[in-house]
Length: 151
Image (tube, rainbow, N blue to C red; front, side, top):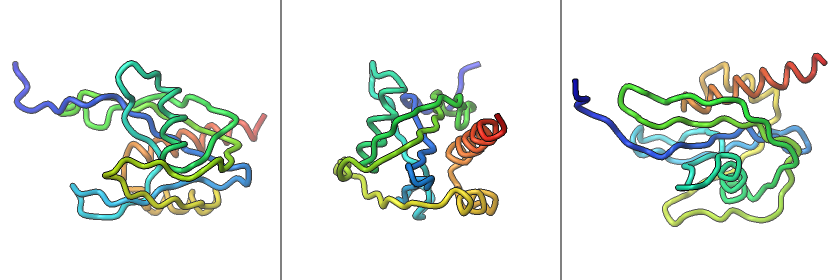
């Protein structure tokens, strides 16, 4: 049976990024399909031939102006495999520090916000992160951090 509707997109990265001060870096940007400004994680498409671990560093630098000492791969998921053919790779970045300013594409308007980890948990549980893949990345990141604290 032929699918009647498939959207072909490149794979993506999304990252829960923690600064050295233990704040989570979030971005706020307008999303045309839902006609709303959303609170999200940094991330974006992986360029052709680019490895996900390279893309996540690039996206963080471009969207936030931050670099990070540590990266942990958290997994991947499909946003809607019924119509989308791509997967999103999830990362946790730690020990972030500002190295410059944003380097945005001409069509991007992104506001960077720093949120304490505890406030982020509350925001997430109150559906303050509406992008499902970003929420999933946060759940994986928080679970990773919880395991790290137990050891």
